[in-house]
Length: 474
Ligand SMILES: Cc1cc2nc3c(=O)[nH]c(=O)nc-3n(C[C@H](O)[C@H](O)[C@H](O)COP(=O)(O)OP(=O)(O)OC[C@H]3O[C@@H](n4cnc5c(N)ncnc54)[C@H](O)[C@@H]3O)c2cc1C
Ligand code: FES
Ligand code: FES
Image (cartoon, rainbow, N blue to C red; front, top):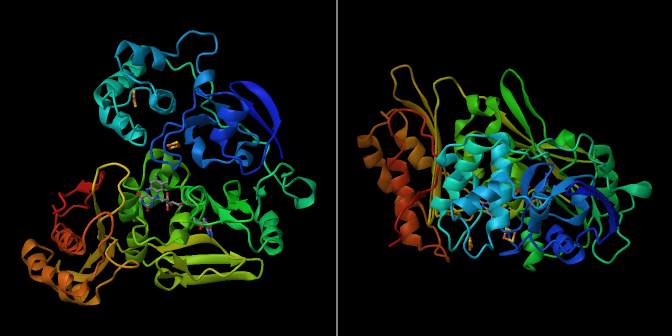
């Protein structure tokens, strides 16, 4: 297909397969080898580029997604041969050894500093948590980024998104732009464009952020004859509020949900979970609809969505269905989606005032950790302050999210304190039958799931889990 975009300040137009990875197009077709490829699966950050000023992983982006975008690679950061202030700070602080991670690290820092010119150390640590460095050590990198923010205004001209990204790769009456070899990729901009594509191409896979799908295609877990991207459909990204519920568009990204004040007010348990999901790069493009459709037992939004009584809205050219989340997810990696249907939204009823919400995830490391076990809870209290209703959902300890009605019933009418939780914890172990896998053993999972319950009492405040808790596996 013909692809037009801006690359390091210059307009560019080229022919490429629509499904060619952006990292390959940049490195192999355009010779911009400053963009590195480490893992190829979203875990190392070496391939970071700026897309409309925001850092994004070029190994999880297709050529067709470049259309109309403003792309900056490390080569475009210092076009006159003079180091960009972030590069200069890295050199001053000795924040570079082998240099393999450095282009991705620098571009991630440029994005951060354009949005937060004076970040705290913990904000820098969070920003680069998806950029792996094996040899320098993060202390020098963090110091360099903070120093760059202190010493120079960012001369980055790429903060603003391209005002009107030349969007739809549905030229010629809906034909994919693909003349070059490779599977066709459509990027519709409206639902009206999407429905006929889904009807005409029932075998095509939809994708939103691509943080699952493009990894599966890469490692051969699935194949798909054609792809349909949802990221340009504005109608799928809205967050709207009514008197008693909030509707979240399925293609809203995790980052958007984390920044949303309506969600912060009503659904802190969802935001607590999102803070632990992947890395900033993953949260920047990954979506709630994608997390739901993947239906992984370890999907971080799923336990919160269960305890918040979420309804999943699925839509097709034929109409709309509303399914409670427990009916929508039918098994590990399985959902009630029918051919031609997409998830269009998730609807969350607003909880009563005074409800306590809590999420905690235990992983084997602090960043980019897949859950060994997680617990989401929404607890309401009666007038006397005793537990009226406890909704609890565990992740990663069963084929899908696990609810334990006996445990919920045992908590009802009691005080939310350590004595109550100690008394109820054995029920958790009794009713759970997790599996052993590459991450950990079943016994350890069962024990962690019980311990997570113990932490529910906390300090009486909503627990803000900002990082994944790491427990020593035994
Ligand atoms: C490095 C890395 C770390 C990760 N860490 C975590 C983590 O800590 N926790 C976690 O839960 N997940 C994690 N993930 C998985 C992934 O990021 C999430 O599941 C994410 O929410 C998927 O959203 P997406 O938009 O990228 O989905 P995509 O990859 O675009 O799609 C995933 C699946 O959903 C389908 N789909 C997408 N949108 C829709 C829709 N609207 N309607 C119907 N079907 C749809 C696709 O067909 C596909 O089957 C990680 C992934 C990577 C690469
Ligand atoms: S190459 Fe590792 S994240 Fe892209
Ligand atoms: S400098 Fe070698 S990996 Fe970071």
